[in-house]
Length: 636
Image 1 (cartoon, rainbow, N blue to C red):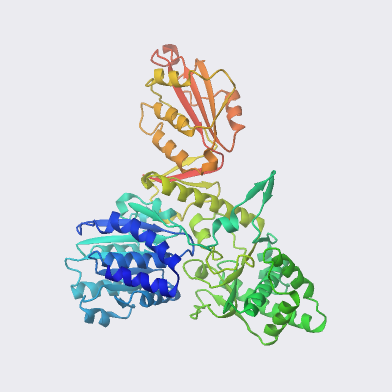
Image 2: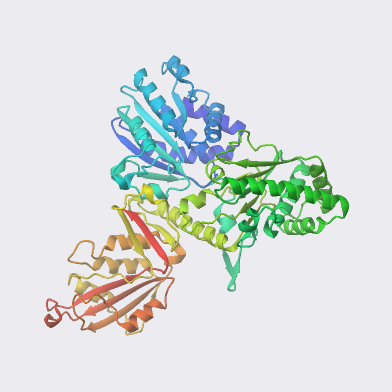
């Protein structure tokens, strides 16, 4: 346990015992079950699942340290093709794994000179040139002959998957990773992400669908999806979480017009950020305070907004110097923050600090995108950061107190949008944190949080081989180009599903379990397991005509509150014909449609007469309707 014990000691010294204990929970879940029993003759794939910015790096380094104590000695950490993220990960490894030979992308000589005396960790970007170079280095070194390759793929749902799967081809990065996995006589491929949607929709044939998942709970003080986006209800009143501040729906249009002033929502966000910065710096417990603006992917938008904010800060300074014209806006922001931060410094102290930082130009306005790869960290200073995709995944923003988000899409992808949740994290002051966005985007993020919670709930309680991803209409789980369309199944809510070729099988059993139900129009069922029992008794003569196991998986994949109750409709002595293309009567169809938000199971006991095309025996025919606007995605 030399490597792991050393790592944990450094974590306890440099971070906290609570963080060390949280890492320990992942190690004790993964190592005994999958690593210490590894046969060094197989190629295995697993997933370490955490929340956005919840400390996944610490957990994956802990797994590496413990794996080194269990006979693995060659590791590769893959990061997204982002220089800052690769350097950030390299620095973390160097600071906490001092019993390893840790190599940067240009450290091929260091790698050779080590001669595998110490366990090796390569920290590489998922970049074609980088991976090709190291593939060749590894072949020429011959160090992997007879060894296992242990790959930790950070943000494994980004770039690693085959983007040409529907073209019957292999994309470059996916091919390079697969080739490196095969260099040793065996491999362990640990995927790490907070957005595993695309991984769960991989076919097992690809080698990129996880065989197991370990989900680790975030530590104390983490602000995540439930804090920002979980809607609560009180006496039929919708309660929006207090960090959320609504803006206009079309503010991006105004932001793009250089001649116009900043829209009201952006002005409110700036005022809130200035007050938060004043408090945190005057109290003296923070070295930085950041404001993240995510308007779109357009670089020209970033530049226009950066210029407008710079001009606006000058206008604010002028107003404060001459007539206190901005004082009301700052006072409004302070009054909003004091509701959730009662010990905030007085308004006058904050006001003087803001005037000082504006006069001395202490606010940094930074654009981060493909044209401006800002290389410093954001751990110091008062920073306004503007960007799109470059700030959407992996990169951390210390002390991010204010977020302004207005990026929209006609077809939002769940994993992409969830990765935009940079407000999540540990070092935010919960009383001062604010997210400014339009109501439509708050609704989107609330739905994503709901779906994410249901997914985690399923993972913790069920076999992941049967997982269904559940999303509302209009939201797709992930990008289409990494999912094999021939393997994808989609079950649509709000639609009636019934077998066209039902069997007479189990008629007497179903008679028995439904015998106690009287002739009511419908029955409210709170025992969902009872509903599942009925579904399993029903069958079809044709494969996939009544995929009852998939329907059960769909039920299991719903969040608990979506399956607290269901509607059961029972009709007996129906004399309907076979293969009519429909089952329900107009009356029963209308009745079922009244219940849009819960499962409705309708059971018809059909006489089964020969003149109607049946075999002369009675039978039960089921019809299931899932909640409207729910889409269930799974992969064969």
